[in-house]
Image 1 (tube, rainbow, N blue to C red):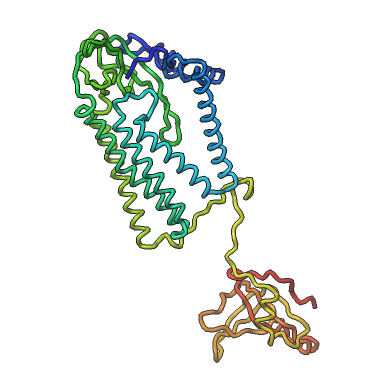
Image 2 (image 1 turned 120 degrees about the vertical axis):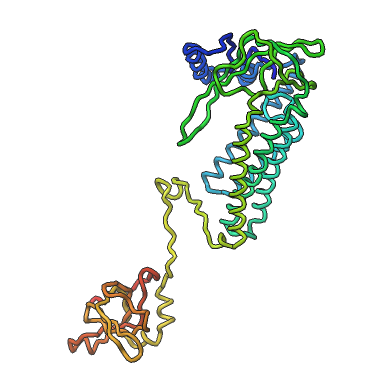
Length: 434
């Protein structure tokens, strides 16, 4: 690509082997850049960062360009704010539509323009357009899933989204790297001899294992060469992730360039077998995950799954701990009085409390269950439905006043009971106060 001398992220040097002092200076300048950006006009920042000189424009065209830039900035801020608001209020559907629409716009833009990066060589437009197709397909598929989500359960929609992204990535990743590796056959078709005039280095920072940020120095020789009578100074379209170069200063070496854009030089990075193998292995893993998720969905295993989305601590409590939703059967007073009207009829009232099971004995029509409190009458349970000894159950009963006045046991006449792990009484009746 063009050697942009004004690119503040690039540092030129004639050192083939970068010294410790040179490495420290390069890293120090890299860490100082954010402070410069904060006090720099956006347009100046773009010029200094990429080293791009814009053509002189008339005052009218300059004003129109500034207006378009301002509109773009405002629209970008609105989209970003909408995503944040959607997350805060837990409107996942709105977030999904906006997010997918942004990626669809980006993918379509890559298809029409072929641009994946401002400083990227125009030679890569074909590969960028192919990548744009995959991005557009993924965004469109997710939008369609959101539109027709009523045909799937929540978990199915989520798994389908992941399967689509994994499937497209599994195809696009090896395809793009293979195309880059063979780009010498259809993009960088001319070979010329160039002289190494020095070395251009920059710093790259990326996330590694355990979310640790790793800093790398990237390098490209600065080549000087002539093609069709014109002189060029250019660097690799992709820098190599190493601080030292294999090409000596002043050495003449053959390089492959794009005849349509002679400043585009093929980088040895894209033809390295390790990069291609890694991309293919990752593609196979992604496709394997897609097949697994597709099989899981085809079997209907995801229909009964639920997806928890209550992560907002401002709405659902501190530390992102949402209140658990009860799955118990809730019993009201009206339900009891309607279902057991005959048992309650004639009684002074009915009551509800917990009773502890004390034992069992065989009965003619089931298992007789008794309780630690002798005030309760025993209850006949179907065989296999009795409760284990020591368990507390919810009992509903009336009071036999005659037995109570005689001082006998069993005056609390149980007409039904329930397991507290399965039912939840939300009425107003408590234990007998006598």
